Length: 135
Ligand SMILES: [Fe+2]
Image (cartoon, protein in one colour):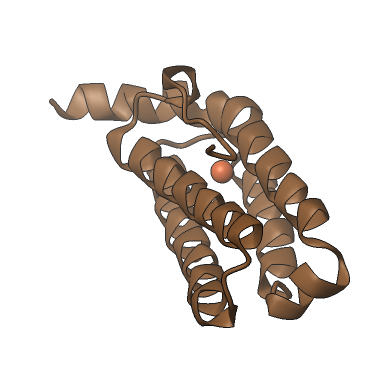
């Protein structure tokens, strides 16, 4: 079973953002799968690295878009990204061992679903507007 089932209602309607969000969710699902199936560090480490890298790529994309769109909450939004980046930076195989994997996975699921459906939803109309104007 998937840890997070991606639903259409998680979409913001901004193709590149939706695609990246979905990719991050997919990586979290892989982490869960590896934990459950007891697969070893060979897959865990690259998966954690993918999560870190795709988070950086995603935040860069999002911040560029919301800055272009003139979103007034840019600074605050960036601060939320910085906070997660710091936590993600510390993520390693040992955090899954020392903190217990459920805690880490629950944190990741809660953060991303909350962020996508609350914080990101706030900027969506601004980005959708510039996308529409560009057509
Ligand atoms: Fe965001």
